[in-house]
Length: 70
Image 1 (cartoon, rainbow, N blue to C red):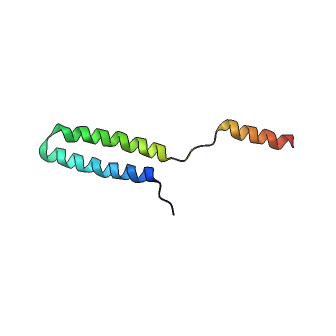
Image 2: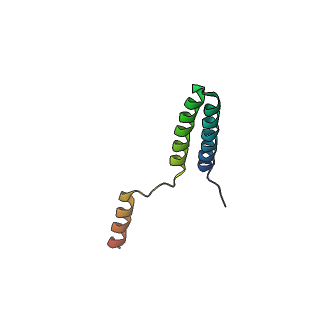
Image 3: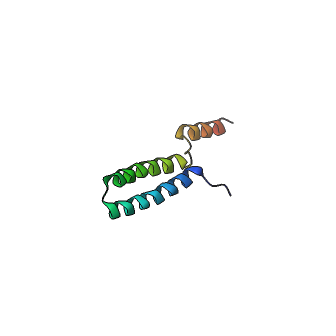
């Protein structure tokens, strides 16, 4: 079973987000809140990049046309 590295990065970012929220709650240092939002952006981007690519609609239509021509 292959693990998608983008998903691993997204999970790590979620863990760092939890850690930064805990540290912000303990210290009220705004840096940890900034880190939270940075980790959030990286997690969303890595999850989005890890999604499997969808087939283009044009490709599916052109394959159907090729089959109908035969």
